[in-house]
Length: 184
View 1 (spheres, rainbow, N blue to C red):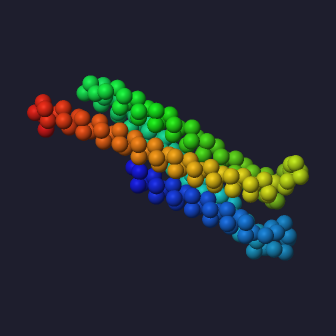
View 2 (view 1 turned 180 degrees about the vertical axis):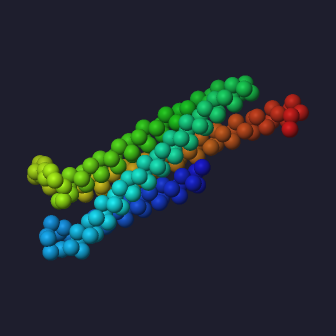
View 3 (view 1 turned 60 degrees about the horizontal axis):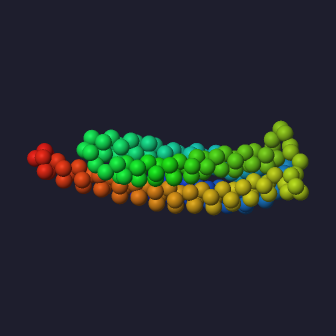
C-alpha cells in the first residue's frame, strides 16, 4: 500500500503544482481582448476541480486503508490471543492519520472556494478583504494548501508504513502459532 499511496500522492502533488503554475501564468484575464488568457483560465478552473477530486481520492484511499486494516488487526489479535498492543498501535496510527486526511480534504475545498471568490466571471464580485484582492487570497491559499497537503501526504505515508510493520508482526506471529498447531 505504501508504494501505491506514494505514487498517488506524488501524482496529486504534481497536479496541484501544475494547476498553481497554470494559474500564476494567466496574467490579466479581466481584459475582454485577452481571449487566450480567458481560455487558459477555463483550463485552470477545470484542472483545479480535477486536482481537488484527485486530492480527495488519495486521502480517501488512506482513510479506507486504515479503516480496513485496523479492524483486521483487532480481529486477528483477538482470534489468536496476541498482544493487544499490536491492535492498539494500528488504532493509534489510524487516529493520527484521519485528522490529516480530513484536514487535507478541507484545505482543498478552501482553495477551490477561494478560486471561486477570485473568479472575475462570477456573478457575485466580492470586495478585497484586508486590502488583499481575492486572486491574491487564492494564490496564498493555494501555496499554503500545497505545502500543507504535501506535508500531510508525507505523514500519511509514514503512518501507512508503520501500520504495515504492525501487520507484518501480526502475520509472523499468526504463522508461528499455526505452525505450532500443525495448521497449513
